Length: 428
Image (cartoon, rainbow, N blue to C red):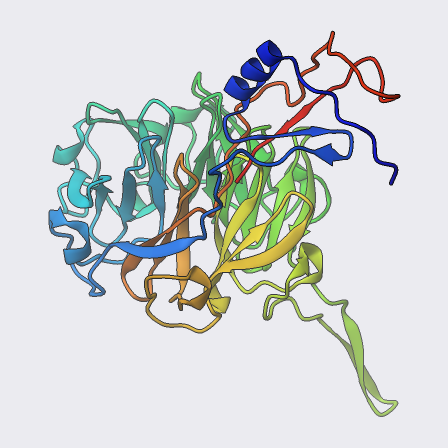
């Protein structure tokens, strides 16, 4: 490639660019200036943040000294606090950034919810949890057939569903629609809540004004089909996440795939594959169609060329990368924005996790996932009753909008041109 001289920035412009960029890189055409002095890229690091490895009722105090009873769903708030929907204990636990565990909702008794102080309400089998940017907690109270909201002040109310009424969701006011089995939850930047009803085989959206609509799933049982999302069957939708542009991702656990619903409402398979059905014949007398293999060991590369094995929960980082817990493969994987799949946590062997390199640690039936504002990933290891945190794994959205800034009236050199457009990239 022909080398061209790089124009020297005037001192005033250079100071402005330096202030804007921080630890970013300026790229001009194919020529990139060096990273700022002192910039480093840290390796992911795994640590245990909750659970002592035994099953039992949670105990307030240091989180790593407490048993966990068996919940799968977890969430994180903007401050980095961790929330655990402890299914069998019928409570929600909070692990603060100092590592202390407290109960923030539920009496511990299995029963019907009562609106008011969250610590005074019974709950019954918690299958999903998410925290919005205002600090409100939403939880799927599955056997009570409702989704509850717990404000930052600790007040509980029914947000969607009808207590004790089991049926498929009906579009309209969310508190007048039933659920069969509300599960995984996600919330978008506008405050819309997404709820997986796995028994109804649909995903619904509850808008910030309380209106419920179906956004994916026909209600029929089957392998997801490309096309309009509300015309597609599901087998066992189990996880949901939404990215910053409004694309929805759904894990269908027993179809062993991840589906994407774009902002136009169209569904496509973005991870996992199914081998074609094939004929098996016994002599010339009897033939039948055998279904193609749908699950197996993950392979790195194009995500739709790899098997998955019971993908369960999802999380999306600020750059649009999707993390998925591949439960029976005992790994957590990353689906990047180019459609490639890679294992980021786990050896593939089932076992208790160990601190250090996340790729050198075992996982034991990973389920719930949550990303905090710093890009750290929490993983619930239900088989070993601990929750781990992996730092430096998620990417953050660029703080610069728009992504390119045009600077004019810059002195030129040689034949490069009268102006140039530097493009700003996050440096990690």
